Length: 432
Image (cartoon, rainbow, N blue to C red):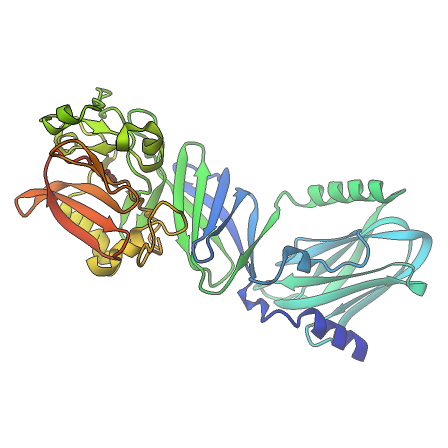
């Protein structure tokens, strides 16, 4: 027992605690109840991973690798799911014709809490383990004379009422060699569970931007995990007259587009002219759009730049059920994020190279993901400030001019300005 305790402590010597381990599953509501895919971005560490909707995100403390969940001497032990909630399956290979095999389970102190011994024939054998309280355990499997042995960590996140802890023998899938064993193991695992556990490094307090997709719908959910949970995406239609589908995010009581508008049509399908001549742009008195530097690749990244006449046009360029925010609605947003002095940082994308350094205060904790698309100058149609500043229209006036919000690369503020109607700014729509 002393040797087991010492080894167990060495195995976990580099970890702080598994209190930071969380399982995040996903569901949908609103316009769709299914989830096709999920992108998870750790905005604190600037890492990301992509899952299918039925997968479970397993957040492990930074410094613990996914392989740490199965410390195996040999290559034919599989524990799934791991972490477990109610029960898990233990599959391993017996390599002898007949072998007395012992399974021992230890808690984090090294105390043995379970033991079972069976005479097993050659093949892949399955046991069921259940009733473990929340914690970390070490499973050791060995044959007599130690012809083969396995060890693995098991993490239990069981928060429900506990049953008696037990391990039961389920059965055998005969195997002839390692290749067949691997094949049979895969089939067994697939038959028992259609969910995969996707590991992601995580430190307590890290902020996650979680983007769920279902068909044409895309919703962002912001999360600083404190427990295992199910993230439910509220899928909302946000489709413009060009059939562009936009990601959306709820910030406080409002639901916003999480990317800039790219439509070339009003809601009634009438065209918004693309004006590329500088002189013509500076003399406009009707709606128009352009791409920064008249480069469509810029438009694909930062969205289109629109003059204020597009905003004022009664045909409406926002998707059905959405509108250009009034100045007061922008104020609701910035107030929700702590006021104009700090709101800009909470709106700005922080894990890309789009914003010039130092990108002051940027955390993107709102999920708004503002990018520095620059603007088209009203007086001569030239382009300025891409990478440094982002400008967005409001639908109402401020100080005798047309209201807008400006975010800067070197300030955390969200500035409120009145600007000229011929300026070309980005547009974000807010839900009615």
